[in-house]
Length: 57
Image (cartoon, helix red, strand yellow):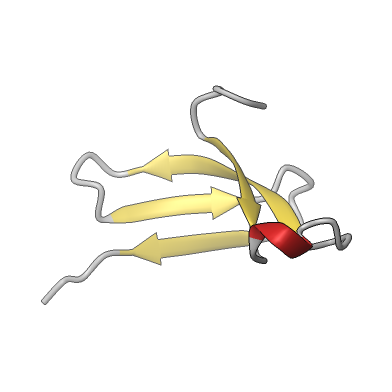
């Protein structure tokens, strides 16, 4: 997945303890609006889906 557009590997722990299983995840940016205010992000196994929104104030 390295270098593929829209595919991210996210680590949730500091580098020195990343050897612990289940502390990272694969996330795909599925849709992004032209102004970068809203993004649709999901996991490749289709178990999780999020709508991320910027500040609208």
